[in-house]
Length: 139
Image 1 (cartoon, helix red, strand yellow):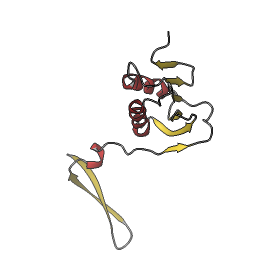
Image 2 (cartoon, helix red, strand yellow):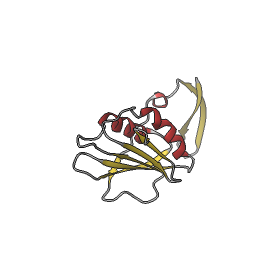
Image 3 (cartoon, one colour):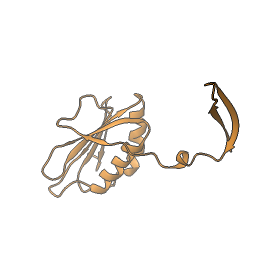
């Protein structure tokens, strides 16, 4: 258990604090709330991490897209996510802004295992420093 300070206001407007013990906050163990993905006309320049979902004339890999979006919208290293639709078969790109410059590389490492070996459509992840990851891998 952790100690929490409980402050009560006195009639004179002064504050008195007492130490009380309480069970750990239930919200601390709850999964983080997802942030909203903002729809944009054009993808912003200089995204810390860009994810492009392509199609081979049969739509994008929706499962991979949902997994990556779930990561980007709940990860505390991400400050904002925007989406730019760019095709007639559901193709789109995501731009993730990170809280620190090094967060892009760490997110790329977290996204790598979410990519299928043979996605329904090509997926490209690009960092601001030019680092790229492709699924399926380019030859």
